[in-house]
Length: 632
Image (cartoon, rainbow, N blue to C red; front, side, top):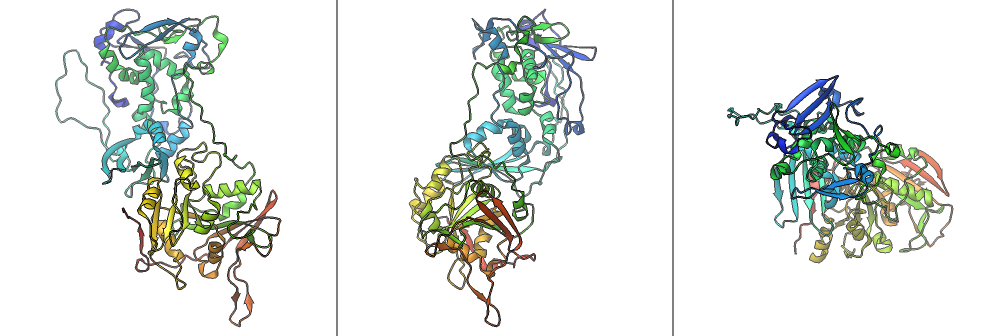
């Protein structure tokens, strides 16, 4: 059923008018305007609404619902009725009347909006960055934004595990105009259809569905897409209604309720209505979505909801009675309460203290650059040690510094560590702040991609690995493992990692010390859409990258200093010693624009490393990066 505003027909149900009339039979649709209030009668439905024409420019600035003085009563000025008779229905169209609490029935909500619907609709509309969500989340939220898009085509992988659907903005496609005028059946009026020219908006997206141990959906702009829509979300909501909103109306319609009664209850909860994209919803939209069921059940006499009645000149309104002081309809519990969405027990509260001092050192994703922004971040003792001994996990960060670290993770696309740290600590490498994906946020929001430097393929890819468990639980992403050409990857390990959404990246370039070239690793990550990398360890990786030859590739450094000494046996972080041209010892590295900030029991040192000039060009002739495509 099409819910496009321009396609609305006020005469589609005229043949059933005698079955649903509240006052007297109708054979013609009537529209009377009186004192600025338009009262429509169509097929027995009575609606009250104001005629407020709106331009596309108006819709961009209308953030508040239109004022209603004598039209449909809002939740704020009408009260529950004293009716004790409830109505229910089923798909056969038979109305079931039963005794129940009339106040509770009159007060139940027609909306079952998922959490944070308004914000998530806007995120999925703007699609500034790729959005990775679970399949369940996609099926929950996509119906509330599907009015924006028109499907173009679909592609599937050979294995069938991956499907890609391509969509374009609805305003890119013109309204179909028939080349010839067909004669209408006797008594049927022509539809008032607005003609829309195409090419208004060139925004295009692709929706990639991956089925595995944790099925995911990734929504991203296509290469030829505009960076932004040429219109706002309100404008497209005015052009067409989304199917999620219309499903709420359909569920009430099949119970045998009048469209105008459903519309009145919609308007009483305008906040939920607007959140679901129904700012411009009309009674005609509700009437259209109920048309199919009404045609299948012409013998059913439609009725208003319990506690509501038709009043001449005002349409369907609440019945005033002795219970008028009971409050708004949303104040009472609905017959079926919306499910709670408790946060995971390991959720961290978002920092309540300021972290503005970090901003000068954070990545700017709007910056045009060839390689990702790289931040070195680790916790160190007073003697520059990160652990008491190799392979031993040592806590150096206090509660405040721990929150800061998770905040840093939320600001980066990837977290990179060496395989030694993975084998020693079995880390999750995710962001556990409240609002991140898996911790109250949408999909994998704020969750960085773990990257493991494992040249020889030592990491055992097993289901009990914390990173894989985190991915399955929807609390993070599966890792990418960087390996060398000589690494022997067992097919079972490859399938296990791919099934969780991870992969192997094979780097085929070495430096003079037969180590994988860092610039090639960063180039590989950039080619996969990674714009920022946070490098957390271990000691070997950090010490190597602090050497002067890598200053062109390292942007910032954030060190958490703990008030303790770990001793000479600890694992240290330090660049190699340097000497000047005369052979005298010299400082190995001097960060610039340094900031020191006390944070709880720790002190945070922030600095910049990369020179202001752009990094050297890495030509394609020196780079050979390939995603490992082994299939056994």
